[in-house]
Length: 132
Image 1 (spheres, rainbow, N blue to C red):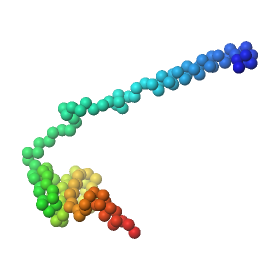
Image 2: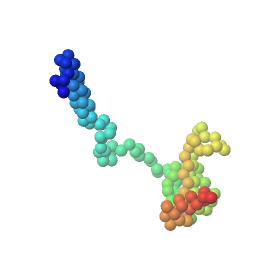
Image 3: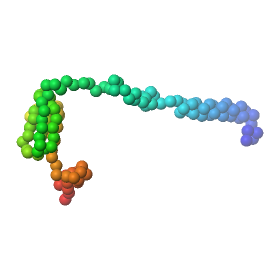
Image 4: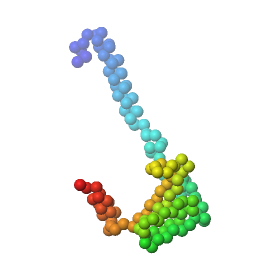
């Protein structure tokens, strides 16, 4: 095809083809670069590198309920509320939490005994409440 162009066009076409080839090579090389170290890092598996702090639980209280079928140690600064026989709630309000509002500064953990054979059964029972 080069022989159909005038000699002035051929002179311009050669640098253009070289530029296209160089861009293609640059694109290929750029795509071959390894990903960032964060994306390719693998965990060392050694527990001493863990970010989980140790907690002294020596002053914690033990909650146990045969009815709920649950027991755990808890920080005595938590409020324990067992107003129903089949549930227990542990909670703590943060300094900005206000009464008669949704919980936005604090923590609340509720444990309940449920009448279900599996988690799927429990979810289905709960969803049945919202069906028409």
